[in-house]
Every structure is written in C-alpha cells, then in structure tokens.
Image (cartoon, rainbow, N blue to C red; front, side):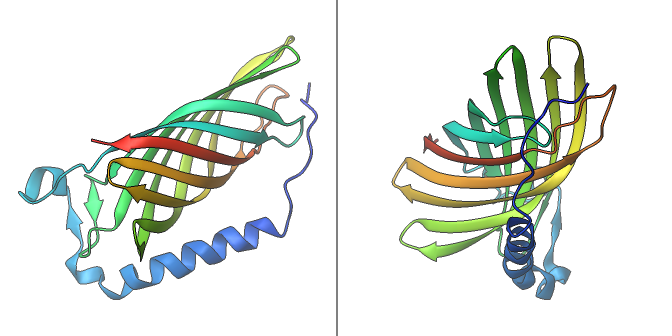
Length: 190
C-alpha cells in the first residue's frame, strides 16, 4: 500500500545543493585545521546549545501533506569541527497525524553555518533520518538520507528561524515517504 502524496518541486533540490556547496566551500579551503572529537580534545569547546519548538509542513511523496509539531536541539558539533568552529548539529523530532496516518520523524543534520551578522546565520548540510509511518493497514520505520538548510536569527538568548529539508527514503512493505519538510522554529539558548 502506498500513502498518496504530491512530489516535491524539482527546482527546490538544485537550490538545496547550491546552498550546501556555497556554505561548505570555505571549510574545504581550511581542511588541514579540522578537529576530531573536539568535545573531548578541545578545552575551548562549548556546546552553545539551543532548544526550539518547531512547526512544519511535511509533504511526503507519495501521500498528502500534514502539519507537524516538534522539538529541535542544536549545538556545536562535538564529533568534528572546522578550524573556524562552524559546524552545528541539529537533532529534530516531529510528529504529524492525518486521516488515521501518523508520521514520527527523527533527523540528525550536521550543518556548516555561516554568520551573516546581527545574529543572523545560514547553514546547510547532509541529514540522516528515521521516519515512522503508521497507516491503518501497515506500519514501517523508513531510513532516509537527504539535505537540510536553515536560516537562524539569535537575539540574546532568543532564537527563531526557518528550515527546509528533503530526505530520500527506502520503500519497505509498500510504504514510502520521501518527505520535503518546511518549518519554522522559536526557542532559546542555554
């Protein structure tokens, strides 16, 4: 059984790839100063964590769109870091329900983040996801690989922003998702 949805816009995928290349180019030039396990090896490493409530629109393919809510935890990446310390890891959980079908999503996205000034930053990177789809006739957990990008604005401890992400999932037992997700968030730094 396939859950019917609309196909994400083809023109958006090249834009996501371009954003990834543009934001990652400075990191490639400084590759020799990368740090491995900075959370353990760098006394100057700090998590610089943010926690945010999220609202998003999930547009799976195939299937119908659904509104979702969730939580996002973002922090400086503790596994690897560029010399300019610009990799932030985003861990996001979201939940949606529509016409008897539930969607629970967990994504992990390390993003190279570029400050734009006045608390504004943009970041992009790869994303791993697990997508739990529970339809009336079947339930499956689908792994996914994709891209994510976001624009964030921090004012003191307050954080707000928008994110977009796309994941290709592997069909299992007649269920597939391939979701395009567009969302907004509001939270705080601690």
